[in-house]
Length: 387
Image (cartoon, rainbow, N blue to C red):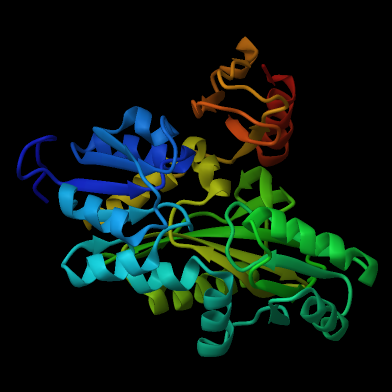
């Protein structure tokens, strides 16, 4: 491959539509290869803005605004990094010859839980939990009665698990409706899923381009209200379950097509593997790869986009723990103990310009045997404070 010089007419250029902490790491990896980075988000000084060649603040749900910026910058590749983007703009940009990663239709299917669930379960025939879609509170009550309790209720469109809840009885449904409504601004359409009493859940990072498909070691994780708290790699699981997960991941990513990394989520119960969700971009649980692999998920994503080989070395097992703010601040300051920065551990601070209670501000990473790494990573974040 020919590599170019940043800020020249022939520069390889990527545009990030979404510039949070995951986009920041993608930008850093692209910069390491001399790729010019344009970072876009809905607010100023988003994490990727801080390391990009240029940054913009626009309403990414506005088709005209997105298309005008793409035409202005003329990126080689457009990388959607969040769900809240005008999909019509991406389809139109693709028609005009711009390369959307992985492709506009894949983004369309995966930005909406309804689209990806129908695609996976009804078009590809993958095993999933039972589900229904509803648009009213009465519809939610009727669907939950058919699916039975407990059931999981999620907006069909939201990021990082926002708006997700579990209704254990009919008495919980109105609260679940309000949680979903608050996350979306309105309840919009919801997916009601049968709760799978899983033994564990995993993310299988699946990266593909014309050179083939590569899988990272399975990542185990703990989530609260749909947002990850702790992740570790590798997740101990049987060879048969891992093979099933790989086969399903390849089936669904081949079905979507295109280049890039996909975070494919599964539930595992009694060796049976259930497809849950998929993100066509780096996954928050995959931040653990910053310490466990020679090529993190972010580096692999950039390699896939550029059409490079997808090889990497595993350094060992490790864990990642998320630190969430406990205070509101327009100028957040994190106090991190020196012990967090050791031979086998460190902290990544995202540099977000504002904090609010529950906002993810940093992660701790530890390289060690899995159980020790999980404990150490959690201990580090427990010692972090913000103001």
